[in-house]
Amino acid sequence: MTSITFPITGDADADRLLIEDPLALLIGMLLDQQVPMEWAFRSPARLAERLGGRFNAAQVAAMAPEELEAVFAEKPALHRFPASMARRVHQLAGFVVERYDGRPESIWAGVDDGAELLARLLELPGYGDEKAKIFLALLAKRFGQRPRGWEQAAAPFSDDEPRSAADVDSVESLAKVRAWKKDMKAKGKTKQD
Image (cartoon, rainbow, N blue to C red; front, side, top):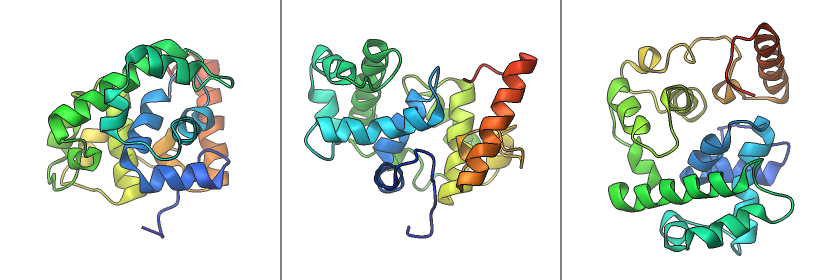
């Protein structure tokens, strides 16, 4: 996995966690709304620090929702809306425990059809159509998880337009994604921040 690059947070340790920990990556994508991408994807590393190091789905799911909300609300908050996003992360962790035995990589490991993978992602709490497609494109473009038909399932995020987290493989590409989002927001064409 050392050849994987995902320099999205501005912090090498936070980026490494996203590459090495599938739950951190799922949480980062979940949090990527109404805050800058860097903040959203850096938050899993901050969450890990606040929980005493690394975390796993079972540990997060076993927490009382109010306890996780307090962790999210600590300064600096892990999201612009710490309470509601903490609840979503708690639901996501519980779903991963219940459906995938606590192993988030099981969501995509061994899946050989893009439509099936998209369907699995759409089942995740907090993952709507756009977020699921971006995550599918992220898995394909950054992590080499390319089931048959992934391009169609992830469209339009499977194309070469630098428009989402899936397109970040360098500091330069992050700047291009930021510029694209800013341009689309100015044109009123995107729901993303």
